[in-house]
Image (cartoon, rainbow, N blue to C red; front, side, top):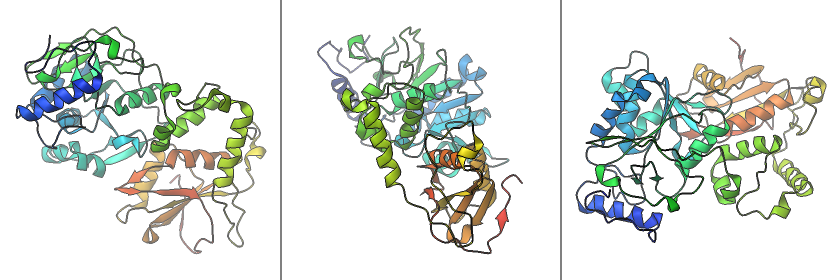
Length: 403
């Protein structure tokens, strides 16, 4: 059944035809809400808060302890519902630029008004803690936005593939299971017939559709993505999403085929991969040891993880964190490091200079810390993360990271 005011889809119509039709109808009918124009977005619409309120009535929401909600404006009410129900709320970082998602942590004793602020895009930035790949997150419910969706559960996003990629990445890190329910929240006019032929195996389907007037259980049987389909990932997307590079490195080490969409198969052989690794290592900044201190060494990829001596356990490897926000406290930084499972032997804090140094006894631990911290943002500041170089200021207080 097609939504009122929208034409019936045909096999000849593409996803883009459907997107353009929905965006145009929302604007022309006066249903579009801020931010506008809605074209090119997961559109906000009149009645979005009412639709989000229906989330509280779902058993899958009542049972969920950890909920992931996309950062789109029409899902603000869903984020608020999760916070009000005292559930763990995870929100993907916009366009996945700074990791996969953040956990929203309202201040102690937060009022209803403060929770509303935490649910907004600004609140997500101000009250979030990054969640690392090794955080063992276990998402019980996924809430995504859509441009169009069918009663069968077929979903069309805004065309950039981020929601599909977020889900695939959560599968890869073990954060979702095959039976993890997926909910989308849209206006009634966005529910229309979609030809199944338009769907690819990377497309995320939904189990529930919430509108201002209806709750639809799709009973969709089509399998959801089983992980990242690297043959559909472009080098351009890989370059835009730092955490995707980390996942690719891990899956490559696990023996999976991670050949990209625009890579010729011949480039994926062992010899080419070895040359690529050498180029990456050569491009890394070369650290210089401070006078009188232990040498700071580059982590050596490929050393024997079983033999601690091969990890350089007799030396200290230091990771530099720069561009820290002026309002950040050392206790807050330590909390973030714990969330990301980054455990340095010592943390040297230079808050006045907006920087800190993390000392590691093992090169492998420093290398893992680099991977976990790359692309992170705190308080709106994109952090500089690299191996330490140059002379550190002496006389700064050393803070034991285990205190």
